[in-house]
Length: 234
Image (cartoon, rainbow, N blue to C red; front, side):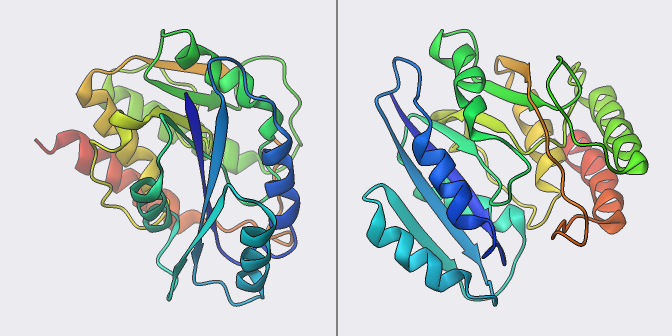
């Protein structure tokens, strides 16, 4: 099996090289025998594009795809999924909030044949977490609860970055949301497909807004709309 790591990128010059190095250093569990990194630059203006060109030259398994204008994380993921060629597709943010060393844990349920989709939860297990915003945590839990009420799933962290899919699952779904509405949209759509979903506990080192965090309250409002839209629509 081969792993595709899809990384949406927008103005991440300070962290991109380090996160790519961390992903490259991860040793994958059997039966995985290799990985590719699909980096989708979503209209960066801070010099990230020059670094992407360097990374493509440095690593044989890195591909960079460019959006001419910023469209949002969902749009970048949609492009990345279209170009992913691995048997399993994993989403990785370009910042340093999520640790690639946890890939073996995320991949285990799929490698064992038990799961089709795996979510990495920041709210279960005894992993380390940076202490930051109270209302962000409340918002995440409320959105997850409302999503669960509509999907009849018992997820603990619908908004997590770490989502892993068998390629045939994610390629069979049309992503419509361009921004952070991707999270409730994909959750609703995989729930309707009746695939096997697992959660595993992960660590989390969140960023402050001064450090580059991008999601805001407007994205939370959009997530509410997406929960209703994609669960109620046939």
